[in-house]
Image (cartoon, rainbow, N blue to C red; front, top):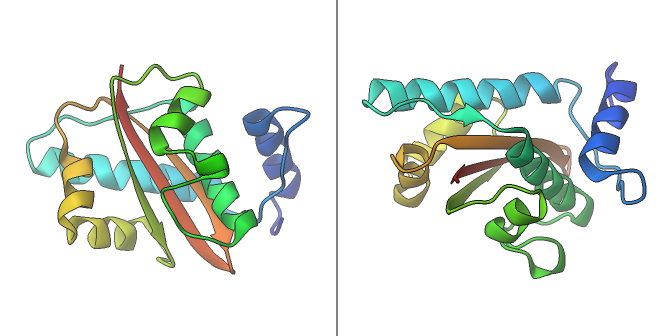
Length: 157
């Protein structure tokens, strides 16, 4: 872990992964700020296009951060995760009873605005952002080969 927030990041990972299964991943020093910025940026876009904002959900944050850390520690970039898990599997494992779910991932963008700009340029990613049937979101951020990897989950109960 890097940066001044090392102890806080370790504590956050302990809470996310639990005492026995924590697998350290490389986090940027401003992980919480990056995650917050991504949610705010997505909600701003949704609002400008007439959609209601999404609520940040701690269970979805847990699922997203677990996947971001898994991508980081396995040096890979995929919607398929630990044990062949899908986004829906990871959301369920975190305890969120999703009726509808989807996931956007990105790698290399330096800030939330660039991530959302890239996602909006992709039909499938844009549909995930703008889907009117979702109500909640969660965000995970880690470092993959020294560059940011972003995971954003969208879901409804």
